[in-house]
Amino acid sequence: MEVQAETELQSFSSRYHNEQDCMEALIAMKWPNGFVCPRCAHTRCSRLTSRRIPLFECARCAHQTSALVGTIFERTHLPLTKWFQALELFLLPDGISAMRLSQVIQVTYKTAWLMLHRIRHAIGEFDARELLCGDVKVNSDLYGRNPARPQFPHPYASAVVAGCTVTESGEPERVKIHLVPQVRGDGNGANRLELAVFIHEQVDVRASEVQSFPQTYRLYRPLKKVVSEAWTSLKRTYIALGTKHLQAYLNEYTVRRRLRRPGVEESMWQKLLYMGVAIPAIPYRRLIARQPVQPLAAAS
Image (cartoon, rainbow, N blue to C red):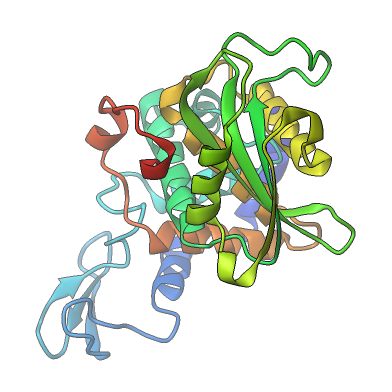
């Protein structure tokens, strides 16, 4: 991981040399067609550069805003260069842990943990807006089953519902993996009702042909393989994952898998930055709050 992270940062530094470059990239992403006032939608403004973070004052209503408002970067005290480094390292094949990120970009562990969870929250919220559409397969499966010993599930393996669109060759393309709350360690997957709830919430049924597999002995094998790969990938990077944030880590894996298509390295970086700009930062208090166990129908 260490050599790989340093290699990725070398390519990063060639694109964004300083804070100004990062800020201009962020402004261009937030307002691709020019400034738009968030209060009155006016398009003319004055740019105030007396502060570290540039302010834009609307020429009509005099409302002042910055490119950081409404993004994962809002209220940050860190340089944008560190945030952009974190985004770059987030796209490593197996991601990066908060401990390793804190060492690479030289911030505290708590800061690195919060940065990564803000990114995970953004991509999770963004991914939830896009339904699966087309030829869709849905499995009842277990996350945490050792691929080398599939007949012996881990005592803390979690039941999940996994869905994917498939290519013409039958390979999974876009994937979603959702936890089934309160089903952990008994070796059972989701039932038919929980599969139906997933399909209702995550699939555009009007424009899709859906095939569901509730029995473990007849799962859609290519999709089952992706769930196993998710467990292996997260296990390589993180020492232990509790149920509280496990859904966020699963979202991280599936979105990164979609972004990291061969030959689209620049595109995946731009898409991740766009997600970070489009979704407001999740408050720290909300991240650490005790979360009640919810049924699948109410889970995000």
